[in-house]
Length: 214
Image 1 (cartoon, rainbow, N blue to C red):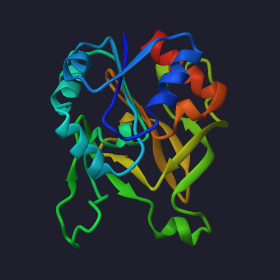
Image 2: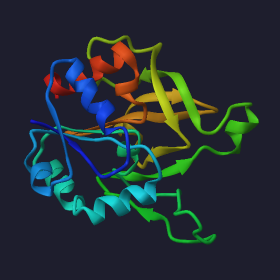
Image 3: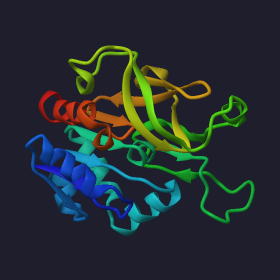
Image 4: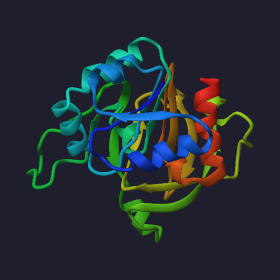
C-alpha cells in the first residue's frame, strides 16, 4: 500500500489523484501505525516549515516516519516534504525574534533549508519561485529512468530550498539565480523540490518510477 502522510499541510488530494491517474491506489492517513506499516510512503506538503514540524509532532508522526525509513522501504518527499527531511531550516515561525534558534527537521538528510538570497531578486527574479523550470539530472536515479538528462521541465512553488551537507546526495539541479538541489536521494529516501503531481505527464512518470523502480 502507498501511504500519503496527512499532517494538514495541503495538496494531499492532488497527490492522491496523481497516483490514481497512473492506476495506483494511495491512502491518505494521519495514523502513526499505518505510516510505520506502509509499503511505500509519500510525505507531501505546502506551507511553512515550522508549522509542518509542529503538525508532525502533534500527530505523533515523527517517529513513525523515521522508523519507516530505517526499515529501508521507499519514501518520497515532495516540496515541503523534502525540506522537513533535513536537519533544520532558516524559515522561522511567524513573529520569531531575530536570532531565534533554527527550527529542527526530521534529520534524515544532513543539511539545512535556506531562503533564496538577494542574488535572486538582483537577477530580476521573483521570490517565491513559481512555475515551470528545468531540472538537470546530475546523477542517475530510479525516479528519472527513461528521461533525458537535460531540458526536463517540472512545476515549482517555494521560497526556501534544501542545501544538503553532502552534494553527492543531489540527483537533480535547477537554476534560479544560481543552482540549487531540486531532487535528492539518500538510500531508500527520495525527494523533489518540484511538484510531480502538478507537472503533467513527466510528473506522473516520476510517480510511476517511484512505484515500480524504487
